[in-house]
Amino acid sequence: MTQAQVPTFGAPPRGPPLTWFGCCLSPVLGVFCWPSGWARSVALGYLFYQIALASATSGRWAQAAPPEDNKTITLAVVLPESNLRYAWAWPRVAPAIAMAIEAIQGAQQLLPGYTLDTRFLSSELHGACSEYVAPLNAVDLKLYTDPDVLVGPGCVYPAASVARFATHWKLPLLTAGALAFGFKLEDEHYNTTVRTGPTALKLGHFVYHLHEHFNWSSRAALVYHDVKTDDRPHYFIIEGVYLALEEFNNLTVRHQIYSEGGDVQGVTHFIRSNGRSEYGAGGLLGRQ
Image (cartoon, rainbow, N blue to C red; front, side):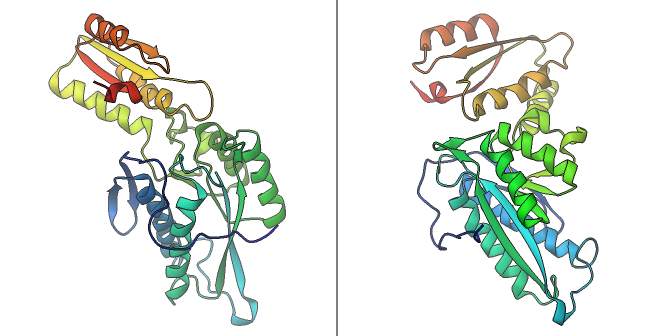
């Protein structure tokens, strides 16, 4: 198994535009947010830097390694290798992690006597996230490198499998994805998972408070595009909103899926018939 190849620093890699907002909790800065997939990847690297900063005074790596006994902290990375459609693709995340490692090793008070090593295996199969490949490669990384930290996967289904392994192994898992409602903190299967990106749970909480504040208590309509392959991002986004609105006793919530072609008239009729407030996810919403 070879050491991970880190892309050259410079401008963000070219790929599809990514416009989600995400937030992260930092021991130094508190909560900070970022506007794009590339910046989200930088936040992931920054979060790792902050973990190392906190660990410099307490925790697993609190004691400096003797000069004659240099120790290695291994990051095991399981992310899409080349598909830039994913905000957490390795070409996006690798420079951020490399910057964090460079900052850590350049600061004398952070992890003195330790070397940081990154090992990468792909979570991709035929250009898409694979819930089959990701856990197998995570197990290989655990078996052959005995890592201290896992990074990724980001896609929901692979992340769920690997996160359960991480909990069993008692390893922290950092990911810029895994937005689904099911990764909630109280779930014992994911209690070592740290998400640096936006989550369906937080979006659901926002919509809940929006309805509560404006007393929108009659009807809500949800429309979204869903293809039951790959990561299903629109489904998981709407899931968080739907489950949050279900907590209202007297609010009627209806939802409708639209196809790839997009039946604009059908969606419009559904909204008019069922909604006083409307929420949607998918490309159809940006059309005239």
